[in-house]
Image 1 (cartoon, rainbow, N blue to C red):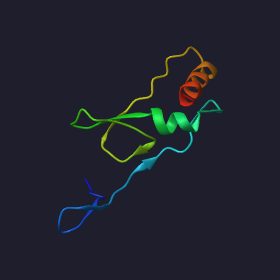
Image 2: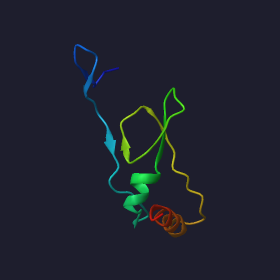
Image 3: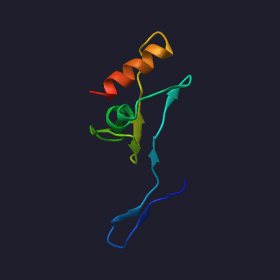
Image 4: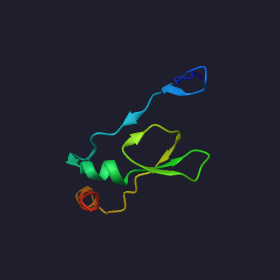
Length: 84
């Protein structure tokens, strides 16, 4: 296993890898940017902390619930939630 974090002599994190989710589509239907930025939820590993963001810089689990019968209805729901 390789560690990609850069830490200084005082133990301060200087640089680390992350994922930034800028776009998402389901079967060609674009998900609203606001949904991605405000409603994706990452359960941080070994913690009760939940981070709502499109920035994934922590170890953990991100789950996106797809609870509609078809893609169009699912994207429509995500976009409606994103506008709230």
